[in-house]
Length: 403
Image (tube, rainbow, N blue to C red; front, side, top):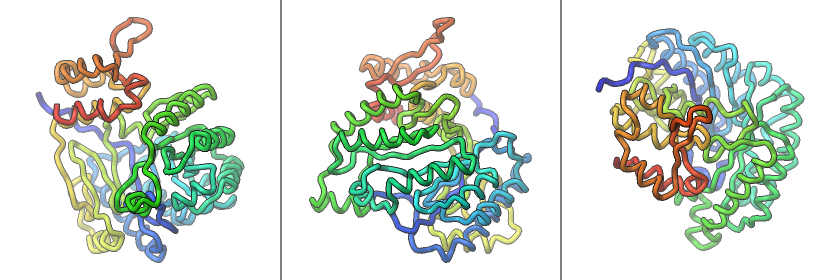
């Protein structure tokens, strides 16, 4: 069976790896105290955006752009403008392009938010994490609940109508009551979108070392499951529909950029440590900021085959079968949509039951997945997780790893 035809990527991720202070739980490619490199980094980032755009087979149209980090809100509005100007010079932006910027409360001001909105950034993702000072301190966060409230107010005044709040649950010493208060405080701020993430303890982080030394208790998985179920019910009662294992939104406000990932669609990755997925290739850029800057500054006018740049250090070809596995694992994260049968057949020329029949039957028997039916025809339209499956999602995903 031939591979699916080339599909132009319509999403771009921009990694901004700078932080004022690294959070105690963070295992991402981020660096604190390197602000002196920001200007050179922006120049290198724009160079990468330019060279990849020039190498593209056609002028690409971007429907989503995502500034992730790190702390993108450490950039000045003029630095953000330079990046967006470079994107507009080498790519077409759709009329309703979703442009998200991640921000930490405490790094924003009324004037900065107004300037960012004026540039065309239309979605703001705030790292609230908790409503409790002790929990924020335990996580190594430097903001307060008051700064979250203030940032939301300023964002609304600036004209932002698409706002996400990130929350973390399953923390050491966190009670159910404390978690409930955090969710209630977040909902009271009326964001259009909420992302709720279970804490993952990484061994080489400050928080991981504290737990390893017995200074903090490890997270309680049973309590975390209770927190998740309570939040799911609470958010549903308050008008938020769950559309992905960790994400809820008001109608029409699902994050379009992240849907690109979960639907296993192609996207460009720019910046130190950024990943991309285009034309059956997954690729990754060099991690360290100085190496990233050096590679782009020394590249001159050299243009590499699309979508790679001078910063690319790893690339791998995704086989047809691997793409099918990834489609199942990523698509099942979409709690409402699931893995759509027609879309799977159209992409791969075969039904998911033909390839993964045994795995699907086992998961159906365990009550982890279900066939969602079209209300009009009753035809089994998509495979999706059950409520039980949302709690035990990894058990479902693992069935497809070695299938």
